[in-house]
Length: 260
Length: 353
Image (tube, rainbow over all chains, first blue to last red; front, side):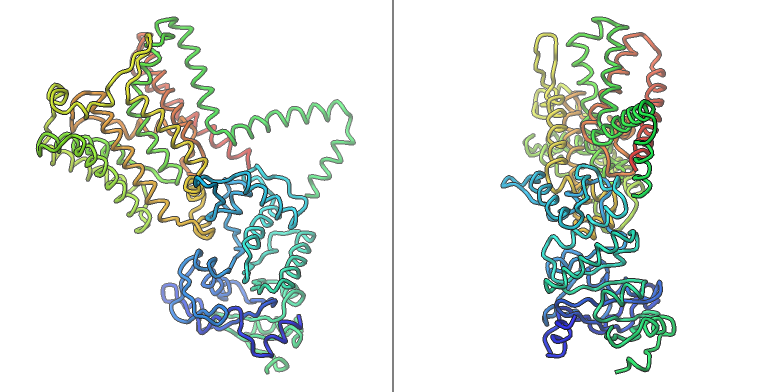
């Protein structure tokens, strides 16, 4: 936790900066001049009610939506992200709330969807993909066995592991997790929490979107709170209580103590 | 998870015979259902084999001869090729109502370019293939870029292409003898190879090779995998990094190209170039696809299933004709098969989730 803090204090370049981002859908400003940033080894929570704009903001970073105005910098360089492939090219990986899995394909096919391993003849290399899939799934979820089933046959937690595996397998530098634990039981939630600590230690920056203030308090270094498409504020988790965060979410005002 | 565990604990604690019986019973249905799920062409294959056996028993050697069985292949040749095109589109959760029209227009282009403009038949054939591919491109572009529903796009294109076909050809048929004398290349797919009593046309061989090639490509290339992913959930596929629009456009273009080949094969089959031919190709291709177990909701099924589906229709048609039954019985039974096929599809989906 302190590493990221020191980095920030030392004036290092953030991993990602989203500056002054706006996007409208049919006259509704879903995101209204919002700026957030993320440093290596840091977890930044994005909090807010349903419809506050946090998922929309993050989908701009992952390439699912295109912003109307604003700019995105990765390692200080301005980047254009117009589709999910652009985001991946900048080592930005996303675990979507909907998981974005192809239900009729098996775990390995999903893991490598869009960037299949191929043989020298250009054919997909199923055995290599399954071997890699087994390796990473063993690390993430040792109980995972159903490698030959379509993912529609998996439980919520297992599907989640596939989605997480897909995000972490390809050497992500920036990881976006949109409510990663919403569909999970307590045990699996704990596994995700451990994974986040592990990834942090590797210097990966994580945006964590969550409803749960307690989860954010536990896992994040900073939290950015949104309401009605606008940024209420970004606070250091060490400086606030969960009540402070709640009041930011509900009232849309920064608490006195954290106003720095 | 916990419910499963308690179920297992309860099963272990229950009297041994009952538990075994339950498990065996359940695992058999589950195994069967799982088998159907991983091998979607199995149902049509079973139906095909059964129908061949039944008609073979009823008709004896009249049906069960190399000649009759290969005749079935010849009769389903054109539909089989078009159904391959239809399968690709339906796998992406679309539908192509313009396959028949594209097929006819392509064959007319091949014929007219040869005889009206005096082009060498090789070039005319290439122009016909390009014409089919281009029609497919329009379909694909409208579906992928303009986000129009495939049903509407191809319904419109069906009328447009068919009208173009009649306007361009002036409803004029090019006679078989003329083609045979001056441009036999156009009838290439009608060439026959005889092995004993069995008769294979080049068209039939092309169909079989096409099925094998497409089955292989769909199974073993990234493109094939993307076709299935797009058919299952285009949004998820896009977020996973699949170029959904490119996949869709390529599928419709390939469909158009295959239809153009079907048009070429049709010249071989009927001998002449006729703008009024192939009117039933739409319905027959969709029938073959559905009976072949490809889900109209996209993302599930195999091209082999389509092949079996086309053969089933051929077996019923020839078998009932040899039995001397009214042709309407064929349609009635095909209708039943279509509904049964979709019911089975729903059942597989239900059990698998």
